[in-house]
Length: 180
Image (cartoon, rainbow, N blue to C red; front, side, top):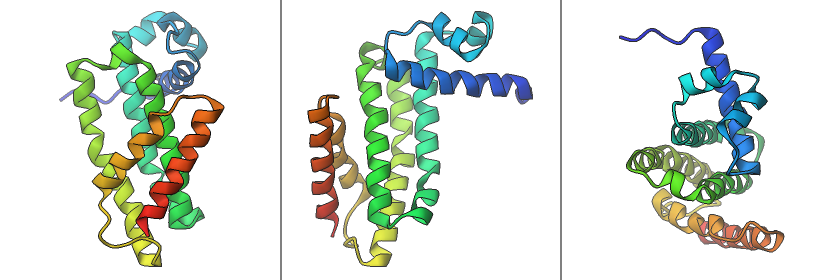
């Protein structure tokens, strides 16, 4: 069994992932060396954690989806089920838009495997919103998380322009209206 990473190595990894997420969002072509510099680590440290650009991209995507899935309960504690779902769906769309913008870097078999592995946490999170909405009477009990995820796909297919994001909000309202 492999030893757990040292605390400083884990902090470096988390810092790299956080910096890389923002860097990829700002510029999908950002270099690994720029990410290392912005993270405050040497290139060797970056490459020890993420030997290839694809490894880093996949880790960023998985990290973001894990965080998104973990945020469900906090969102529900602060907002009504439908408002929490709206906020969460916008964040999901933003993550997936970034992923789609990375094109060929995320079309390999290992990338597809990771993307497939995020399906269950995402549909599980959607199901939690649906269950909360059913409990408040805002959502029909026959709505399935897998169907909602397919409908949400429209949100990340719009152009990332002000008009496109307005369209995504209108589409999200259509999804929400279909739940009741």
